[in-house]
Image 1 (cartoon, rainbow, N blue to C red):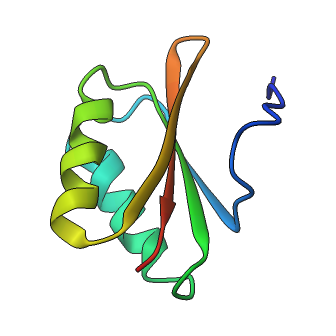
Image 2 (cartoon, rainbow, N blue to C red; image 1 turned 30 degrees about the horizontal axis):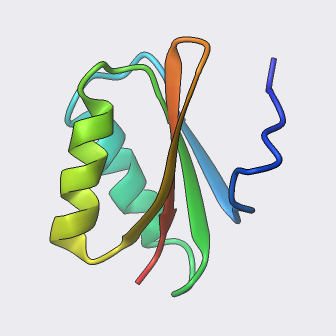
Length: 83
């Protein structure tokens, strides 16, 4: 069940990487970012314990903006704005 978070950014594309271990969530995010336009937002759902740190590093290295990371019910939702 999805929980609506009014503070979460509006997104253009969603990738559910639940159950995947590093580096698969990052690879799925990278592929999805290539499908959207500059300035659009990608929402990625992860359950990997290391994903929060991995997405912070990925954003810094790739130049994509990490808008938010929201923990909810055993998962972390990441919002990336494509550069």
